[in-house]
Amino acid sequence: MPTTDSDRLVHDENGGMPRLLEIMRRLRDPATGCPWDIEQTFATIAPYTLEEAHEVGDAIERQAWEELPGELGDLLFQVVFHAQMACDAGLFGFDDVVRAIADKMVARHPHVFGDESRDKSPDQQSVDWERIKAAERGPARVLDGVALGLPALTRAVKLQKRAARVGFDWPSTDEVLAKMREEMEELIEARDQMGEAEVFEEFGDLMFVMANLARHMKIDPEAALRAANAKFTRRFQRIEDWLAEAGKTPDQSDLTEMDALWNRAKAEDKTKS
Image (cartoon, rainbow, N blue to C red):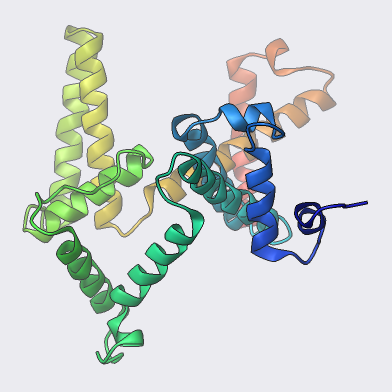
């Protein structure tokens, strides 16, 4: 049975946020906590934070609503973990995190919490949001503040959006597609005539232009690639199923057979859509 206020809170199913904060404090206690949790740093936990954010996105993408509370809880725990490490180091605490985001939301929504009119489009609200953010940053270079830790495709789109705000942008997808063809030709030339470093660079250039094309076409490239990954997984698993029915595994097949099965899976997808 719980014998201390801390124990009672930790085991109180209705303890809410204080319960979670106390659990995290106990896990990091140098004398009685978990050795793994105690030895973690911001740098070692950061990859888990990104992973949990992606798992939230994955649950939403799959509309797995029964999984979403758990995934959001995992992400919230990451915030609590970082805040506890900061508290241990004397940097800041969880209350500072809450205060910072609350103050930011109030400041960036003057049309809700201030005296500005709400009578404007979502696009105009996005413009105002960026204007307020720029004012908060103060004098800065155009591309400052685009986080390095973002997925590369997402960061490419954000960099391009920043540049577009000051007029550095193609007027339509025609110019983007022409640039994409140019980059493809340069990649082929690098493959045929140059070394690995040049191939690597030209491939990156092509990916960057692809991200720009997605932006111009109002496509989220991360979401599009996730959908393509899911489609590939679904179709390849159908290949495995059909091979299994024939008493075979993929490594007992060959490209010709699997390509034919791929086309069968593709046709099957089209009949379902």
